Amino acid sequence: MAKGYMYILECSDNSYYTGSTRDIERRLRQHMEGTGANHTAKRLPVTLLYYEEYDRIDHAFYREKQVQGWSRKKKEALMDGNVELLPGLAKKIFNKHKRK
Image 1 (cartoon, rainbow, N blue to C red):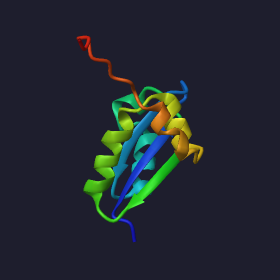
Image 2: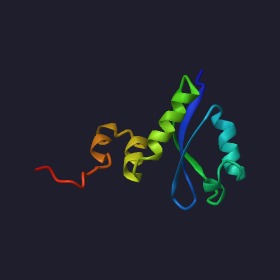
Image 3: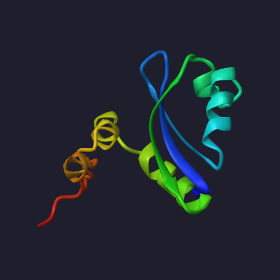
């Protein structure tokens, strides 16, 4: 049985909320009741779009933090199962100093 979940919700304003929890059913109830998070409380109702199960909560939390930093397009590729697109959707970091 899973001991942790990373999940993505869609809010009423079409924004995404990424979180992690040990009990996904209880956490979803909290979000729907407006007590889950400030972001979701102001954007009810929410819909569960995606989740991943982990053996340990710290792995789910690590994955939450990873996915939170992703662009909307990259999250959508993950949710659609298009994992081959993920590397190409990574944020590009440019060095301000040119090489000589």
